[in-house]
Image 1 (tube, rainbow, N blue to C red):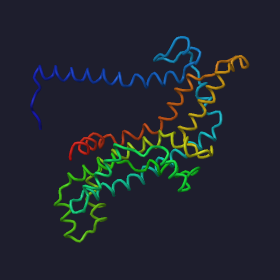
Image 2: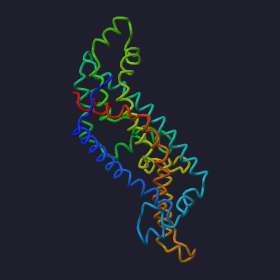
Image 3: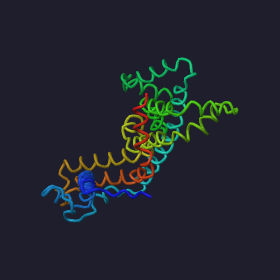
Image 4: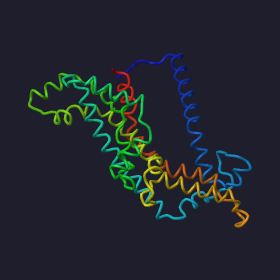
Length: 294
């Protein structure tokens, strides 16, 4: 039992830190609060008076314009969910295998392989080679065109490698002495001890796949395969084009383009934001060790 009592100066310093952290937390949360408030505001009031913490002229027009065709939104949610789960799972498996291989000292030319992986973080072939590869593989207008191009990241591989190099070599050697092969050693020894970095990479991958709309704009022309972000992007573009020609002259009502932008943000970020609390305990440890240890 800890019987140490804080002195007056220590209590004052602790209170000061709590106040500072509270202020910083409020500052960080304020933009998101404004987005939520603006999504329930009237677009005309936003254009007239700007944004506020409390909704101006409560309205659901922004959400109504998004869910005008609920079947399409539901299908886009399904596509995004599949792409996120499949891409995160496959990508994590591929990068874990690669990171484990180049973290082993007995692998020949591991430094050469590591340099080649690192080299791709500095220089890229550009968009045209990627487009040619995707089309030659027959992935265009398929769900895999949204997964395979982003399935592997050189930076994440290096993070995993650096973390795995911190695992004591004696544990790996003892597993081999007991007769465990490479895959069993990886699955039963290395992976359980690498949960912090793997959870961190999983969070990064999931966020990347969920928020991606660019791959769909390049490789997918079938509307049934549009992910949520690209579907919302097209809905907003269509509303902006209609508003630009003065649709209010015919309908007598201003289209809710401003509130629709904010409603888009809420609809798009709502589901994925609940993933972070489950991975938060691994986040700081994984990114700090994986990035610092060489």
